[in-house]
Image 1 (tube, rainbow, N blue to C red):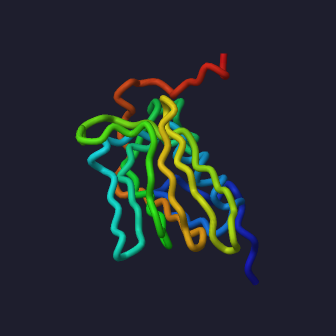
Image 2 (image 1 turned 90 degrees about the vertical axis):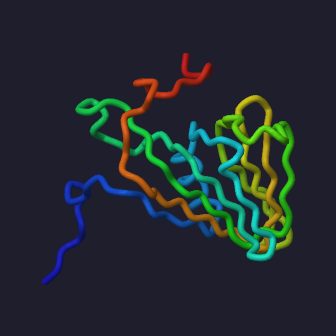
Length: 158
């Protein structure tokens, strides 16, 4: 006889999540909030219809923060079925500019397609026109102590 999994059975480990609908995307958006990345870590492969970011993601899901302090982890955020990429407020020519990801926003279009917008700090945005929603978030390193030693904050949190 088998039993259902219990929350207590879970353990910390690397994330490997996919999103194929708006509800799934909200989960991934929450997990990548406050991720930072240099502009050089963005890749658009038109032939493969993939857009990818190598992020330094804050580990919002980490329940052991009181034991070891705030942590970040390097993660790949990959978007599939991408037909077109555009950006606003993203400096061109300076690959070392560090960008901060605030949220992922889905705007449905002709089903199953639509527009995915990556909202960046400072009014920047990356717009992905997609044939269908397909997003993957995968941790690729071990967690490391956040260099700031602090949990990211927002003016609305005050």
